[in-house]
Length: 395
Image: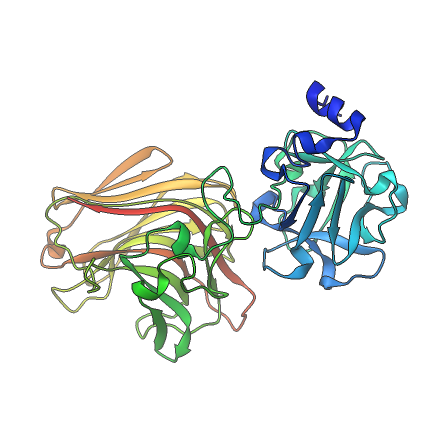
């Protein structure tokens, strides 16, 4: 097992973990209640929201339910949900011991302390661990020798206090992001006519949010959910939860290629069935085409792929421009310079693509979010994308 820091060891021995907080400085109060997030940005979850003794504790998509609301108490070192305690099954100490919900009983099997971002069970001296490093929903949690791996790293409940990254998980997306220049399209509404939400309705800490567009309760990310089954536009077979660029006066953005234009984002793809578009430059006025100029895709394999349109009539050439694992943060910038070049930067690496002259008659606008690229009759499969930064600049 990893060695604990002298300060944490002393605090634990004295029974005063509150000096650092059970999870460190972010949880310095006696108690904090909210989600605990970990591998892949997913939440510690009570299976089926059941409160019976022995109910499994697992990894699952964050959904804001009581089954994912944990109270971390630095005074008695417990972690509680649904009125019961996070417990090592049968007070086990071996690697692979399952973690469960059980009546609080004050035993060491229900005592937890912090160690370098990990959560250590006092009775076993081992860490809360995601079995087989899997981010699949329903993956059971277990105890395992502490390694410091990402499958043993946990983010504490933050209540209404913004975490270190500056995003407040207790407010709507408009409380963390400037949405005054964006309109939201969602995968609901009438066939061929998806619901749109105005920039005015999106703005502020109490702005619009729902199951398709919300703030992640663990880290404050602006999160977009697009299932495989949803209402689409007439020109697409795919559902989307996506922002469309607007002008400050509320009109639709529609800028000429001349000049400089830049969309920058930091994000992670929480889950995806096969492929999702997370950013694009779309054609606006100037002709009849409804094609994009460029789309930036994230594949389930982890590949990041640029789809560059060959002409307004269609045909797309793809270029693999990066690779990150599902659930990993990454950054992109999609820019136009000189009216004739697309400059695409992914995690600091830049590639350039000439803009064919056939696009010169068209104006453009930016889009960002989760534009799922697969369809079926499923409302549970799809693409969930979390944004940590989003900015547009024109010059």
